[in-house]
Image (cartoon, rainbow over all chains, first blue to last red; front, side):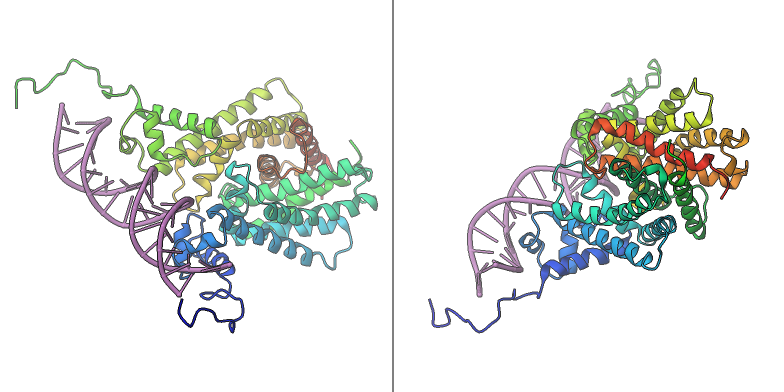
Length: 218
Length: 218
DNA sequence: ACCTGAACACCGTTCAAGT
DNA sequence: ACCTGAACACCGTTCAAGT
């Protein structure tokens, strides 16, 4: 009601943060790295971002949505790592092994992050699977599928007979192998394997599967 | 201080429950089946068992220990299922495929239970991994290892050269494949695969790995 | 030995209110 | 539009107390 009712000078950014949404995701990533688990509370994330414990609700419907955004960013990073790792690799069999090794390394180097990617939202048993997250996970998987498609069409993997159905199943098997290996390694169930042996073990596992793909059709 | 100070008549069972420890585990299993996730609270488990919210602390150091006991029971059940499934199967390659299929089916039929087995304690990032739980997980894994050992010594898997180190790695690869497949299926990441197709897909994935094991040494 | 009830410091989420 | 502060119904865990 006073004279200073309106000011049109300022650009339309939020006044407290430049981008609170991003700040919250970064705060969550910090807590993840520091505590090596994702048991941190939403209130803790808000404190880290120096806002009240309710400010996050302006950017995320609930805690799950924040975790989903963090998880999605992880899948995209993983996809980029895999893509970069095979940039110069022509042979599909070699590329598939290389991708598997890089995948496992990402998980082992970022165990809490990796567990959050799969466990926080996707694994919650809820039907509310945010579209962004599923898309990001598919994007990571598509790197594997792409290689297997190349191997099928170039007859490096003759057992697939260049058949889309078989290619789909083989991609799922490949993802299963690297995902399972990563999880077991993170959870300390990979025997008494010393950490420096993980790379070699992952490579061996990937090679065994690739050998199966190269073999004659069943 | 009164005359009724001691009574030695009663057998030494706890007075409220016959076995509250077991009742708590069963209550947790009920909640798991009903809610299809393990976000239930310790207080809720206590209510289900009709005791105060502190009674559990007489049997478990904390909530994690209760979850660990539930998880351990899951691994033992899974081990038994696998053992039974291969009772009449002689050939190691067929046994390995069969075991994989049964493994995946157990996970898909009990998704919340399966996720709890790996995610609640093993995946918490804590160093407090209860001995019982790790032993139970190893017992389940040993079914896979046993089959692969037979395959190696009978030259069904010649690539392993009956070498303990290679057998260990192959067992880890096999567990990785079925664990990863199960997790992806549960988390809805197994493509658009209809539920009834999971068995066939798991079998195909296992066969691919087995084909790799049967192939010539790398 | 086993269980209860009060208490503490936390949560996630909602609501009314401020600018 | 974005944020704050009070409030609600919960937690996990501890402690003193009961039988």
